[in-house]
Image (tube, rainbow, N blue to C red; front, side, top):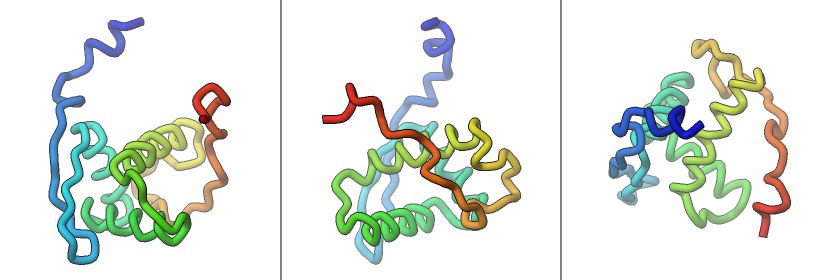
Length: 117
C-alpha cells in the first residue's frame, strides 16, 4: 500500500510560499506544490488567477462564517473537496465548465465522529 504513496514525485509535497494580496493586505500562504496546482486548475476553470481565486474564497468564507481562523488549511480542504467532488461526479471532469455555473449540494459527508472534537 505505501508504495502507491511513497513513489510520488517529491516535488508534489515540497512547500512553496506565495505572497497574495487580500484587499490590499499582503499575506504569505505556504502550501505544498500539489495544492498550488489544484488551486491553479480551479482558478483557470473560472477565469481567475490564483490570487483572485484566493480573494474570492476568502470573501465568501468571511461572508458565510464571519471570520477566517486558518485560511491555509481552508485552501487545502477546498482542493481536497474539489478533487473528491470530481471523483463523485458532482463536479464535471470537463474543465471548460466553470465551477460558478454549478449547483453542488453539501457533497461530502461530515467527518467521522472520531475526527470531530
